[in-house]
Length: 420
Image 1 (cartoon, rainbow, N blue to C red):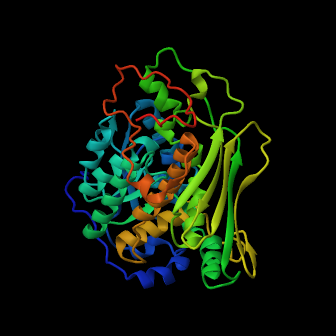
Image 2: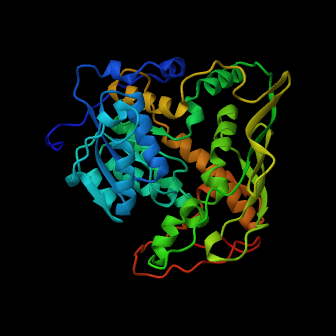
């Protein structure tokens, strides 16, 4: 069967007010909405652990989908991902795998090839450094998008995503981001109650992501500089954005959600306490402490770090109001797995069976909230939102090639500019 001959599915546009009311009810399986229609065709772009997990979650939550195309920079990662999906314990996931060899694409330009197929939805599961370009390209190819977070590592990438999200809205394309708390029933119901005054006027928030280092790999002698950066990607801030951007963005997204806004400025500190200066550990900080200020004078205290375990502090959000406090998820009823729910919500949006979702600007603003904290910590300067958004800082090399040298740079030092 050819997947090139069928036109892309469109969806009905739902009013924003309807979206607010129906978001809590998204647990209905989207397959019911798509019953009797041809399966939606999905492509997986970025076949690492998170991309593979997103594909499995999408197939778990929706029974009228077919995964028909896959793309990754590295062939071994693509093959490993395909094996996990087609041999998955869940029969629905296995049955959703329909990828032919002709629709497997490898290399730095593989994203162009997968977007040239007639998929309806692309799962953007590649690394943070390239997501903004992939999102832009996917919108230009009229694809609906699930994108992991963060969506960029620098302000140049953020502006690219915001422009793409606005264009997606004009084209009627759906975008859902991997800030899964936005689709977690406990959070959705609790934050609605906070907005309705359950804890009174918001006075302050605390948001933490304090844990261990996710991974750090030694270099295989066969790997070039670029391959090593991409395989050991968490440890290079031009690839991952540093831990405040790659992980703590989840908590900062909740702060923006509670506040219904983004911060107006930030003052931050950070550093590197335990990692030796060797290639394996890259050029990241291992701790950030940020004071974000919002328009109404509310301050958000932010801590993120990856120290040796056990690392006290934990991962949580807390809002403090004039009438009490909340963990931002403690006044809601338990829903289904939010990693599955977000894909149900996306497919319902695509099919016109639920509220329309376009989270592009929302996740771009949450990502920039994290980026501006990093910029402030790296430079030692207080930074406004407009200064961060309009910065010409661009971290990603323009000339990515496996034949070129990309030496490890210095760990950022306050008072020195971020490398451009």
